[in-house]
Picture 1 (cartoon, helix red, strand yellow):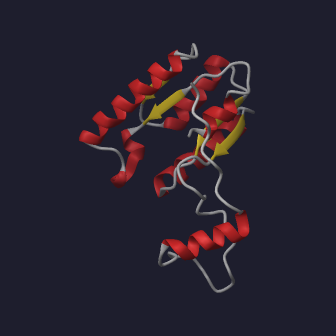
Picture 2: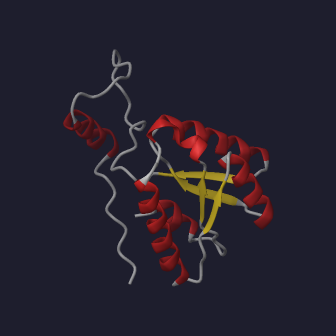
Picture 3: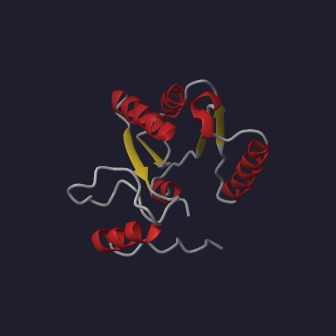
Length: 158
């Protein structure tokens, strides 16, 4: 499921983009043989997008927020949709995206696609000041109680 792509598809024009900065990946980023897997996944995504007359635009550089600004300027984007990641590095990168997009008056829409629940969504009880939940079930029960059941997968397009 790619919620960002699904939501963006409601616009008349969509430009799928993949921005890559090894520098921004940090110590847990994609390295070595995982880069081969990533490249293969991007090729497969591009093939699927071509079925809908779309082309995946891939950019690589030092600063993905600069690349994002450039792409928005080149195509006159009015909105940018992206799927949130849940790493320290991605939080820093996504904050830069929000700032850049605000500076150039482009709407920023963050989507949740990779997890059943966004870890920052549930309200924490007083006295709980971070750390981890211990196991999955206390987190899952809290999310279900506060947020409801997770969304169903997007039906497969044929």
